[in-house]
Length: 545
Image 1 (tube, one colour):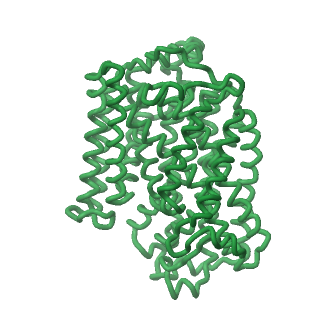
Image 2 (image 1 turned 180 degrees about the vertical axis):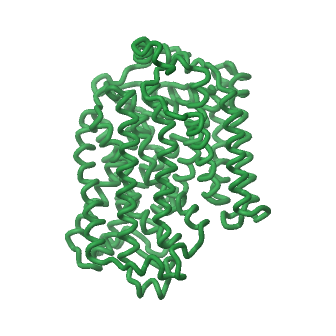
Image 3 (image 1 turned 135 degrees about the vertical axis):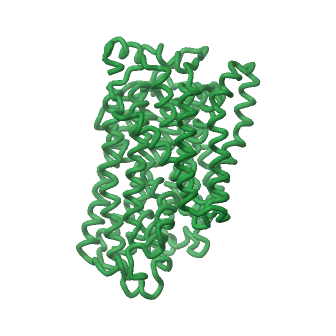
C-alpha cells in the first residue's frame, strides 16, 4: 500500500466536458494527414483501414470502460495492471502507456507547423523540408512555442482547461464536416475507386492491415483513453466515463470515413493513371485539394484548423500524460514530488513540467509528423495490452469492486480484444514492432532501481504475475521476425500462418495471464478509497449481477 494518503483532484468534469475531451482528444492531427497516408499505401481500400481500426479500438475501449467506471482514479490505464498483476506488470504497462501519450504532444505541434508549410508565403515554406519530410530549425522553434502554450494552459486550472477545450472542440468538429461535404460536392470521381490496377484493393490486403497501424489510423482514434485517465476528476465517473469514451469513438469514426471517401474521390484521375496511389504527394493534403478546386474559404479554415485541432489535442494530452506521470509516482516508479498537487488549482504542476521536458526530447528525436506517428502507434498498441487482461483478472479476484457499467459478454469480448491488439502489433511490421518491445524491456532498469530502494516488496509475487507478459513479448518478436515477408518478416512462415499463430498465441497468453491475477496492495488501497467503497455499499448485492 501507499504510505501517504492520496491527495484529491477536484471533480469538476461532467458528461458534456468528458465528451468534448473524448472527441477533442481523438480529433487531432490524424485527420489532417491520415486519409492521405492511408490512400497512398492502400489505395481506395484505405476506407477499410478506418473501419478495421475503428472497430478494433471500440473493442479495446469496451474493456477499458468497465475499468474506468470501477476505478475512477486519476491516471487511468497506468494503474489497471498494477491493480490486477502487481508492480512489474504495472510498471511495463504504465511506462508504455505514458510514453505513447506523451509522444503525441510534440506530434501535434509538429503536425500544425508542417501543415502550414504549403501556404503560399516564403516564411511558411521555410518551416519544412519537402525532400527529407522533416521540420527545419525554424519549424522546430515554432513547434517549441506551441508546446509551451499547451503547457501554460494546463499549468493554471482544470476549469479553465475544460472551458478552453469545449470551445476548441466545437470548431474541431465543424471544420472536418465542412471539408468532407465541400470536397465531395466539388470534385468526386467514382472511377478513382478502381482506376489503379482495375481493383478496389490494388496493393493487397497486407497493405490495408499495415496502414491501420503505420498511417495514423490507430493514432487517430487513440485519444479515447484520455477520458479514463481523467476519471478521477469526473462527476458520476462510473456512468459518464463509458458514455463519453464510446460515443467519441463512434462519432469520429463516421467523420473519418467521410473524409477518406472525399479524399479518394477528389484526386485527379489523370494523376492516378500517371503515378498510381503510391505516387501522390502532398504536404498539406486536404488544404491543397481544396485550393485545387478553388475552395479558398475551406482552405483558409483548414490552415486555421491545422493549429486548432492539433493544439486542442496537444493541450488535452499534456493534461492526461501529467496525470499518468502522477499515477506512476503514486505507484512508486517515479520520484514522489511528482504527486504534489497545487493547493489552488488542484493540478499536478511538477508532473505537467516533467511531461513538457520529455515531450521536448521526443520533438528533437523526430522532426516530422510521419516520422513519429508510426512509433506512437506501436507504443499505443503495446500500451493497450494490459486492458483486457486486467478486466479478466479483476473480474476473478475483485468481484467486490463496484461495476455500474459491467461489460456484457466480457468472457468473449475481453480475449477477443486481446487477440485484436496482438494482430495490430503484428501488422505494424518487423522490425518496428520488435524495436518498440525491446525499448520497453530496457526500461526495466528503472523498475529494478525503485524495487531495490524499496527492499524488493513481494517481488516473488510480482514476478510470478508478470511472466506471461515477458513470454508474450518474446513470442511476438519471434512471430514478427519469422512471419510473412508482407509484414517485414523473413518469410519462414506465410502471413496467413503468422496471423493464425498470433491469434492462438494471444488466447493462450490471455488464459494464463487472467489466472495469475492477485489481490495486490494497490488493489486493496483502491477498494478502500472512500469514493470506491461508498459506491460498493450503495450497489450492494447488485454488483455481481
